[in-house]
Length: 503
Image 1 (tube, one colour):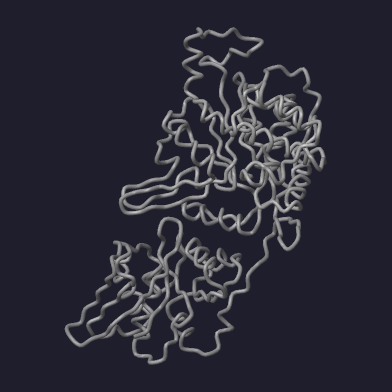
Image 2 (cartoon, one colour):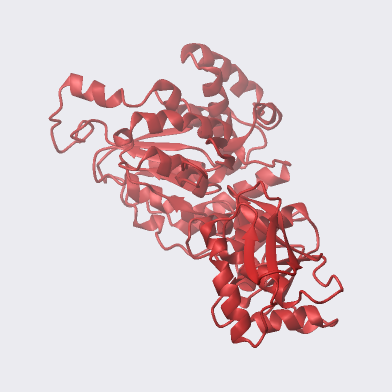
């Protein structure tokens, strides 16, 4: 019995599946078994049509195709090609399928099509096996060609696929991959990619120097950021420009971004521009965190991994969503548990939020009077709990005046500073950037000079800083020191970091 390797998604990871078949005497029939979904059940008609339209006789036998292991639920139309090859080459004695993974949906005319699950499947499998051999159509090959350590072979239709396994020389089917077009920098043996085009530029932002500096710190160290200010002062404007000055991405991060785009049924982009997700405050808890009664599906926090998650009008999000955000913000991962599935997602995103100072928005305005009473303002503030606010690294109160509007800085200038700080962090041997450092790494990399050490001991007492707040201040100070080209954290770096602490 010959086996063809394929795979099925379990959450966002791939499980290797063996497609096997038996041909026995009896009334002609065609059955697919192995805890399969409707999409696989329907493949019987696609496979029959594809083979008959290309002059391949359907074996007049009792045919049983099994997708093993049989206790795992499988779904996806990408099994079509593997099932069709089992039928078309059933009488070949040699095991021609050994070492190959086969993916592709069949058209009724025998053409092979790409599906949204092929890229995440191949990427997940490639992480666990070296020198993988994959047979796909050209549309799939264009996507998976950026995945390292895989050998890709391309076929257009079922006839080409049959010829591929019938021939010894397979070089004419080999696909030549393309290099990423993004600019890059090399640090040691690792290459990092970045984009230098700025669709939304910081030069459009007038004034707000303190907010722009906070945005620079946020980008350079992957720190969580909150803006508070009157409507129209530039909170959302600055937030939406931060994605263009974020640090470079490794190839693994670019591929992970493409994988999540594919799972979200979006067009895959292999650019080094990090994702920016901005859900509306009326979004459900399941859409933010992921969910589903049988299979856990990705939500906004998983889709924003290695990018930005932006909450505009923060207090208007439901309290259950805000409180549930505490775990992914602290641990950089979240486990979604359902009766039939348990899926863990990485959540290494930058959380940026904006809010008004009161329900009417004019509490901090120098132009309009506030219409809210003290009870309404307090009720509005109480939507955000202390434990949630403790996860925010940078807190900025923005004014609504433009008296410093002549001081204009471009995204190009800010991005150069971010790239410089990024290189410093990587040259120190950091795996994570400053904002995501563990407690052990904070002690290793966030070193204070003598003067700043004395100042910090006094600040801990005077401001009654919690253990988490102490770490937040140190991580922000480390990023400011990198931007100021300081080896250790100085007094000025620490004072600036303390100024961004929420009071």
